[in-house]
Length: 176
Image 1 (cartoon, rainbow, N blue to C red):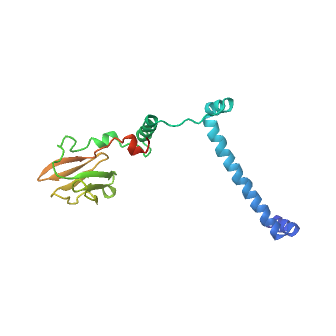
Image 2: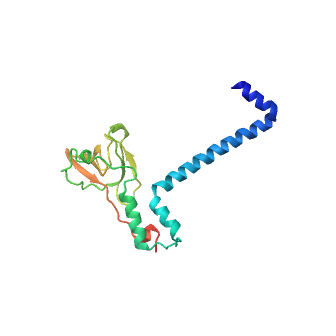
Image 3: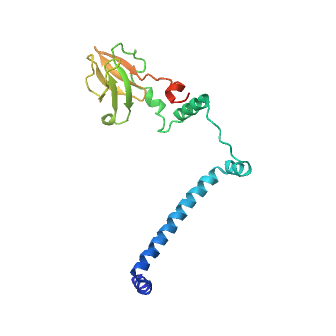
């Protein structure tokens, strides 16, 4: 291989060899981009055939369709779904806590060391992160963290603190 490169570089010079390598790399990049585009077009062959036969008309998105699109994205579970059997763990029948705590978010994990709950001590308070075994405001202890709720121990009994989901309005989504 080395004699071939030295033979080429002696004929075209070092500058010519650099240009040749750059052109080769550019051709490989173009080929990769073309294969990705071809693959995307091949997946949507019906949509592509239709778009070639009829001129495309840009439609404005109505507020109701924007909400439906946002709900569709939310329901598509982009980051996966929690294991249904894993969410029915211990404490599923425990009552909802009466403590002035708001569960703002969770990072659930099968490894307890990686699970985190974001809890605010009342409305308008800044949330803090807590791990299993941490003391919570109000005297409770965080026992378990699940995808939709946490299990805490308060005065010797188990209680749930669930995520509260808010349905967004069109104004909050930024549509009129």
